[in-house]
Image (cartoon, rainbow, N blue to C red; front, side, top):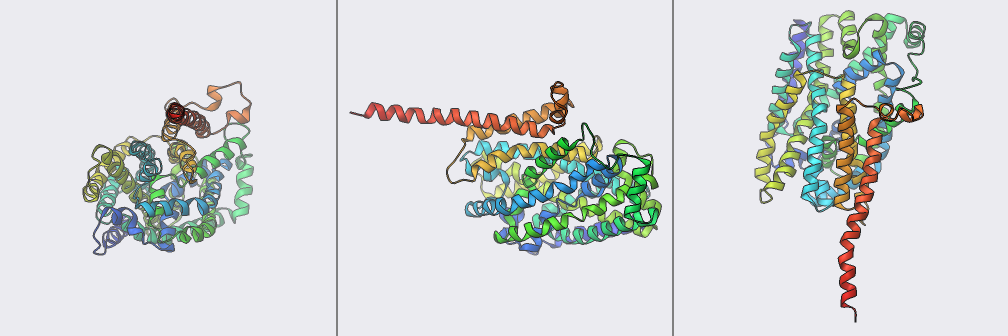
Length: 493
């Protein structure tokens, strides 16, 4: 019961901070969703860094180190190029969002292309992508709390309690609650992860180097990339896909609106790659469990960090680890809930009711928070893929928004709204088709060279997206220009 009491205490603290973060502010749509655009470097840092240290990191990264070995290092690699991209991308997004007082990612596309229908499409794609990501957080939370409580709470009970708490403070405080809870979460997770990553290899193997030598002896080649499937081609294409999609998650994209000025992003882009290195300690904990806690198969590999923790430490410290894991679910989960509700209310509802005011939309967004949470809870109860697979599916979807975003940034519009919509639909349809049929590039085209067959299917979907986007933009631009040419010719003397 000691571990469960520690976890419960931190849950109460998180809810208290989340509710208190409102601070007497009037929760208008802008204040609730983007913090009145008044967050400084520290709060924006913890919000954007919240996507690094989630239940995916806590369980999925260690689980893949345990079950997959070398290929898991893609998780360490992809954020660094994303941060480099953010140095130029996020200031441009922020300036446009501030100029037009935007509150969601879908708003950005709708305004850029002067198309509410495109905004609604982007909102729907974003929500569909965020559902597996939210399921990942909730599933991870259930696993963490149940395991760290030594089974006193079932995963489903833990899921319900955590989701109710999360829904409550998101509805009341919006992004303010997420930001202040994230401060506590980052401090805890850093301390816990660094300690586990150093202590466990030393305790079981005598050191980190000795641990890797032992694993290589017991499982030769496990620490390297494979010749097929999870090969160097898979690694590079997955890193590319994840880097391009990193800031295309609706909750991350709209969280960037909360910054006080664009210099916030440039300062964070310098520091965040160093922060990413802390992930190494998560891998070390997962690798340490390979021999210390053998026999975990498939999705049970996600339990490796918790199993070795329970085996090694006293219940009070297991409770601290469980509390840190709980917070890694609450913070990104709150952002995902808020972004999903805001996107649906501000883009989809406004398309049907364009005369709706901000106050009406704000009320609807808050009302949608428990609805989205209930849907995610339903999916989480049904179980399914490993945490990493859930995240990769979401990345493949949100990355389909990248071409339209990038080509919308120049002053001169390079593509049409029809082209942007067609490209997104083609890319999403490709991702859906290969995901539902569990198809790989090699399965579709078995005659291709092995490096091509190993490409991440999300990259193939991105290529389809670009081809369709370019073709439809060319056709619709030509169609729009033709009447003007005819009018000019007919009016000539």
